Length: 564
Image (cartoon, rainbow, N blue to C red; front, side, top):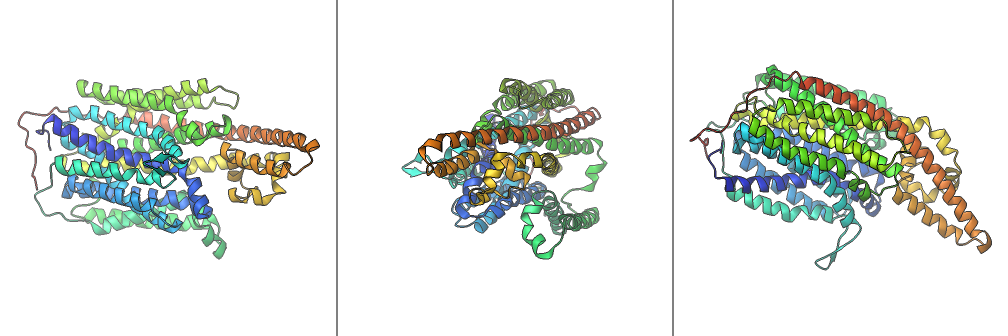
């Protein structure tokens, strides 16, 4: 532990760590605004899913493994490796000359991102006693909230083309901006963060790491963009998606059994099975998984609601989340300060989750007819609740274990939250698609779709008109503008006497199509928000079963640990 360090040195370390974490959190949202331009430049719509999934797979795998390695080799060394990998792979992602190269570097970038995520939360436990950690976990929670707004805004701004130092920005700059901040963070961590590791010779659980990697990667592939990623395999073999997923889940189960058997015998297991004998650990990872799924249900689909119903652009939809983000940042900081003063965290988790659950229940009342002001009010409630409950989970899990297990314990919380988000997003996405499909006949019968079906070349870049996802895409502001401009070029060739009338009729048809899609989209979201609310109810109930441990303050003259 490094409780003996000066406050100035701790501040420098935390600023550099939070800067690194901000880059990772930012990368998860900033890339969304650049995907359209990436696909357009590389002509690789079929590879779109891999750009996101490659990063998600390696990040999820890296988190638990990096957490364990940091316990063995020291937080400083592993964190420096993570920052270096993230900065270098960001540079190479921006320099990619093709979609395959980009996907490869995105996978490498995910490794760096996972290492940073695993250690950024853990290092708080190294620098501060349990009683002091709350305020810093709260600040880290605020960093995540800030990134969810800055990401879409900055990504949209850079992608649209700006002049910086005489250079015109594009989607590549969403990766380039990571490099200078990464270099600064690396330098500060290398200079100011002290080394700490166990005195004994580290023993690495290679087999456990390999089985965990197989289990997590196949699980993610089985639930996230499976039909898109394996479209070529399904077409070539004639295999159904159901059969493919059954095979993949079988592999996940086999790898899981192998992992458990390996961890029972490993000297230094990646995820010690003795953790699961701890009541609070079981409750915390359960809460983290449920919360991760519910949180994605609100953030991700509120953004799409704003685009489909209010006609907001990706950048505008990000701005519209400010009320939620403001609530998260405010209560994250305030609750962290209060926890450090009071020394108890359980009431904050309970109150925060109750408030967040009420907010999510209110989301079920959203319809295409409501005003943005009403939605903003709901988002404030959700943000206030999540800001209280979200950062405290790391504090709770850290208080359950000794310093030598801090890395793997903290990263386990991150792992289960990430898995909850991934699985939740996949389930919610399937629910949304099913809701659109249920109304697809009435949508396809609109004059607008009939008009587009006569000019397939104009819409083939967005997918097939029989696909529910394509219909949703056609209702986004950017795509509606593209289709309208293409149609207008055709109308300009008509006689002037009928040109205006045809143009007005087309706009009316497009508006009718938008109303039907928005209504169908809203109806589907009701089911998603109901499920998200149910998950939050379960997470809240689990929070009441936590057995809180007193948060200990630092003692004078506390030993710093064994330095390298």
